[in-house]
Structures are given as C-alpha cells and as structure tokens.
Picture 1 (spheres, rainbow, N blue to C red):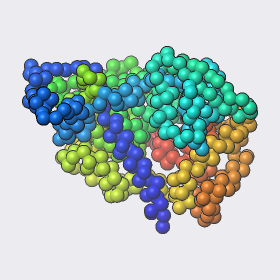
Picture 2 (picture 1 turned 90 degrees about the vertical axis):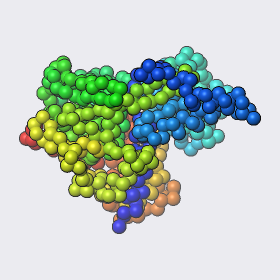
Picture 3 (picture 1 turned 30 degrees about the vertical axis):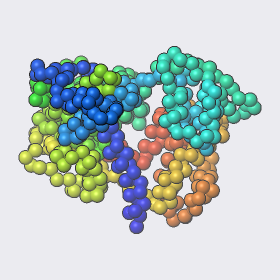
Picture 4 (picture 1 turned 45 degrees about the vertical axis):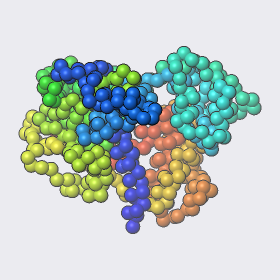
Length: 536
C-alpha cells in the first residue's frame, strides 16, 4: 500500500550514496609529481603540440587553459570510474575531509527561517574562546549582513573560513539579550573528526561508528577504543555503514588492532606496481575481544579492506548488506598549477585472494547507477536476490566460502527496514519537520536542559514533555494534516527520531546515536550474534 511512499524515502538515500561514493574515489593517496613514466617524457607529446599550435597559430584568440580543463576529463573517460582529475579550484575542498582540518572559527550551524543559527561550538576553537554559544543567531560577518537574505550555506561557509590567523568580526543576537553582541576572533585549524561516536551499549558491549578513513582516523579510533576498554569493553561493534573509504594505511593499522601476528591484511598489485603485502605485526591491543563489523551498500574502498580482512581471517562476523564493490587503489599526483590527478595504480585483494571490484565495463554512468539496480531487483530486502559467479569463489582461513567480483557479502544479511513507513511519515520527512521541531524546541528551552549532559537524562526529561502531540500540531501548521491511522503506525519512529534530534542539538552525536539505536535492526542483529555462542 505504501510502496511509493517507501521509495520516496529510500530512493533519495540511494542517490546520496551513489554521489558520495563517486566523490570518495580514493583508497590511498601520496603527493608525488611525476613527469616521466618508464623513462618516457610526456611533457612535449602530441597533445602539447596541438595545444601550442592552437595557442600560437589559431585565427582568433582562445583560452588554452580552459580548453585543457575540458580536454582532460575526456582523456580519462575510458579509464576506470575512480581515476579522476581535480581542478585547482576544487582541490582544497576535496582534500579537506581526507586531511581532516581547515581554517575556520569552530562552529556548526543550520539555516532556520533564513537565519544562521549556531548548532554546536567546537571545544577549543576560536568561537568557544570568545563565548559564542549554541543558539546564537549570526547577523553579520564583518560588514556583511547574512540574516534574512537567503544566502546559500556554501557561501556562508566560505565567509567563515579563510587563511589561518586572519580575523573575523561576528555580530550575533542571543536569546535574552536586547543588544547585539560583537565577537572578534582569529581563524584557526579546525579538526574534522572521522569517528562519529563511541559508547557502551551495555556493561561489556561497545559501539564505535567510523565515518571515513581520513588522515587522523586511526589515532581517533585508537583513542576511542582505549576509553571504551576502561569502561569494560569485551565485545565490540565497528560500524562502517555509509563509510565510503579514504586512506589505505589507516584501514591496515585499524585492522592490525584485532589480529594476531603475521596475518595477511591486504595486498595490492598493478602493472607498474609490484605486489605489496601488508601483515599484522602482533601489537594489536584487542586481539581477544569478540568483534562484529557492520557494512551496507555504501561501504566502499578502505571500509571493504577492513571488512574483508576481518572476514577472511575469520576474526569476526560481518553483518548488514553487500558493500559497494571498490577494489582499486589510487595515488594522487599533484600538478604544477595546483590541480591533481587521482590515478588508479593497482587493485587490492583481500587475504583469500579475492578482488571485490565490481565491473565497470559498461561505463561510469552504469557503474554508479548499479546501486539503483540492486534496489529495484530487491537486493536491499532479500539476500536470495544476490547471485555470485562460482568462478569467483574463495575460502577464508577456516574454509568458509566467500565471493569476489562485487563487494563484500556479509555473514549475516539484514534487510533494509521499511516497516512502519507511512504517507504521513514520508511527508514530515520530506519537509524536515522532525528536525526543525526538535531544533526549535531546544532553542526555546535550553535552560530547562541545564545539567542534563548525557543522553539518558535528556531522553528521560523529553519523554515527560508531551512533545509528540506538540509535534503533530506543529506539522499541521506546516501543511501536513494529522492522519490518525498513519500516526499510530509510525509513532515509534517519529518519537525516537524526535528525541534523538533533541539529543543531537544538545550534546551532538553522543546524544543522538544511543537514542536512535532502538530503530536500528542491524545493531539488533549484531547484539544477537555477539551474545550467542557462535564463534569462528
């Protein structure tokens, strides 16, 4: 009955996944500038000759640089989907997530009724040092008014960011203050964290969510595991769902924490790249804890290296849905004008010898739209819809059958949960009404939450405030009329999402993830497996 409404929620998610995996093309980068390959210089080849002829002899004046920028993507179009050219104007932004830092002021913000509102202030950042607070409305940046002028988020971010050490004057309106407050600060390095959250689900079971494999991910991961160990961790869920990859080295170091000495983690090999094998060194601190790894259709690259190494070494169970299927290794070659080429130089192979790279013979468009085909063919809801080629059959260290040629298949399949999805839920989701209601409520009631600095106290307090009925009225005022049947069916989802957003706006991911966990059937399966007698 609600097939169309379910697709209206799921399909935008799939589009986002496809775009994200396309953007996150790399699993290993280095900063080399290479002018010679196999002792052959390409600096004065045919292409350069043609461009020179156009520049000097063409009848009209032309911009050769613009021609070059248009020609390069055509040169790469018949290669694999992950070999990409990055123009100089885009390189800083593309590298930002990988290297995990930028010059900024240290706030997260949202647009609320055409006004920039501070959602979170990063501890130790410039904004925290001048007492900018969550809930502050930013009216002006230097002499530029940004309140009520419908500026794009990207434009506001550009205005806030800049060279390290440069100054920025911020004019803010704070609830309870009649006058505007003026804050002057200096831009500084703002770290981008790649470990979203790490917490104890119960007395001995820990959960850690890794968003990407960036420059600092291993150190963040190691630090988080150390804290969890002091809290009694004996079992661990590593969540790599939605993690589209990053640095190969970090994936290797992270897997090493769980393996005994001399276990193969991954190996790479290419035409001009000799076979390189990476083994555990026995220094891992968590070789004996019970482990599961969560993956889904957008887990790619370094995520698949991590999951493949754990699976092939029979170190832990993989739970979720089949991963993306990226088994190619890139190196970043910086070019003289500030642009870069991320060039595929090798394939990577899991310890059993499988390359999990999916086919790209039909071109890049089909390659990235393949995830839509999976959805249409029912793969997200049924394991039986997945068919592997028997010629790509491999065995783990203990003889279990695994397959190559198209992602990591989990040991325990968990279908996408589309139960309790109604037209009402679809409409309030499309309009982001749960998110907006939660923000508005927190913004108006921050004093009521004073002293409630953990998710349990936030949840307990929120449950007593009759928020669900207030949300239904709020949604009606925004054009979504109440539907008693739909509301009854979707109530659990709506309530938990509402409380989780309140937790997020108050204490970030530490307030959101534990509250929303009851909706996560994949974590439920992970807990079931970890609490069972099933061993590898």
